[in-house]
Each structure stands twice: as C-alpha cells, then as structure tokens.
Length: 377
Image 1: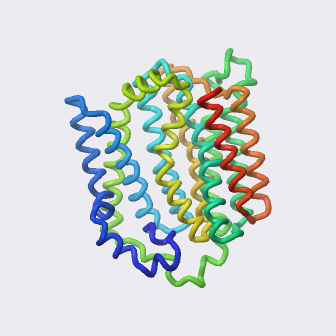
Image 2: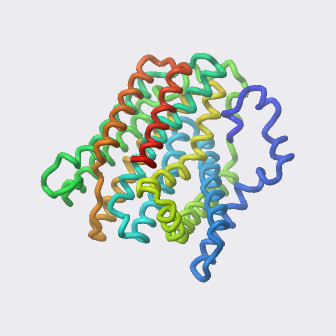
Image 3: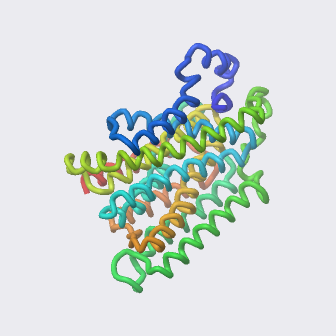
C-alpha cells in the first residue's frame, strides 16, 4: 500500500522485492497485532516489563495504521485518507479515555493538552516536514486550494470553539464549559466534522483529489488488495486498537512516575500521546510529499487534525458528563497565542496553492517554539 506514495524509480524497483529481502518488515504488521492482543490479555493477570510493553505498544500503533492504509487503498481516495484519520483518532480517543480513568487527578486537562498537542504537531511539525521535504526535492509544489481551504476553515472554527472560547464563558468559573455548554459544543463538533466528511467524500470529492490524478505516471496507483486481504487487515486493525488501549492503561502509572521524576510539566504527557499516535501517519504524509503528491499529504494532515477535534472532544465530553468528571478545555494565554499564530500562518501558507522551502521552515520553527515553551513555560 505504501508503495503508491513512493517515487517512480522506487516503484519500478518493486515493493515486493523489499518485502522479500526484509522479513521483519514483511511480517511485523501481522505479528504485532497478535502479539499486542496477547500481551494485553496477559497484562490483566501479571505485571510486565514496561520497556517491553512500550515496544509492543509502538509496534501495535504502527501496525494499526498500516492495516488502515490497506483498507483505505481498497476503497480509494479521498475515502482512504478519511479512514486513516478515523483509525488514528480511535487510537487517540482510546488512549485519552483510558488515561483519564486511570489517573483522575490529571484527567481535567489531559484531553485539552493532547488535542492541542495534536493540532500543533499536525499544523507545524507534520506540515513543515511535508512542505520542506517536498520542496527540497521538487522546488515548488502545488495543490487544490478549494478543498484545503475548506478543511482549514473548519479546523479554525473547531479549535477556537473548543480550546479558546471556554476562557470567555461565565456560566461556571475557570476555563470550563458547563454541562449544557459542553454537550452543545460536542454536538457542534460532530456536525461540523460530519459535514466536512460528506463534502470530502461525496458532494465535492474532486476538491480533495490531486490535480490530474497523476495520469502521466502509469504506476502511480498500485493494485488494490483483494477482499480476503482487506478482511484480514480489518481483523488485525481491531486487534491492534484493542492492544493499544489496554497496553496504554498498563503503562500509564509508569509514564506518570517518569514525568514526575523528570520534573516535566503535565502538558508533556499530551505531547507524548500526540507524537506516538501521529508518527506512522506522519511518515506516510512525508513520503507522499517527497513523491510530489502534496495534495495527499495535506489531506492526511488536515484530516487528522479535524478528526482529532471533531471526534475526540465529543467522546471526552460524553465521558465527562456520564462519569461526572469535570474537564478544562480552555488554553492558557501562551498556548492561545501559539494557536492563533499557527492558524494565521497556515492560512497564509495554503492561500495560493503553491509551497516552497520557506513555508516549511516557518512551520518547523513554530513547532520548535511550541515544544521549547512546553518544557520551559
């Protein structure tokens, strides 16, 4: 599946040949879901080595995204990027809800920190790497402004309503929504995301397809997997998702102790979750940009950001209301400034349908500022 994002020369070399010469890479996507599933079951009975659990957890995340890509390739674009975004969001939601229940003392701000970290990783680190790596190889890249502009507008509304507006409401003290406000914002988030998904996949799907569909490259699209392979990937995807959530629950006390020993701010946990979840999809987006398919890269990046807020916030809101667990969504002043700056710069970067190395460097420096001020507030 990932061969479709590689360059023409690499495709001619053949992904099958690479799979044959690399048994680990060939069998890892099938092995890690099963190993993770079994490890999760064993962890209910006996304590396991945290380092080993961490390695299996990372492998299960990578495997989950791989099998989501197989299914996505079967259904085609732009449904493929939607499925990838949904798979990543399911993992993220599972991790957040699991950690919220495991550590109630940190539950109030965990969702906010994770969602904000994911937005900053996507808008600055991931987008910066895609723009920079693609421009280094191809000098200037183009994409369709209509679809990307619609995605960015939707993302702007979702981020401001969920992460900034709570600071200015007065029904309850602090940067929180009241129960009715939280339910309303959750409904708005779902409606906006569902509308965007409808536009992306049905009514205006051509706005999100690469211009010309790279018809000049006969190998631009690898043959889709058959039904048997797709069904197997679906089963392994479910096993991977179960393993990720359960293993994260067993690791949460160890992670909390390590962060406490290191003296790291609580927001660092959100950065770690976002980095773990978005790493595999980020690699796919960067490969697409290097293969001069920037449209696919931006679809992956912005689609993940939209799914992160449009699906994560409602899920967390439901848990908060049902379990009577208050959550703080409003960002502090420093984070609000960085969020506004990132959205403004992203809108300027994507305004004319062309990108160069300069835009990539700007976004990467923005992420460096965010990361530094997270550790040194």
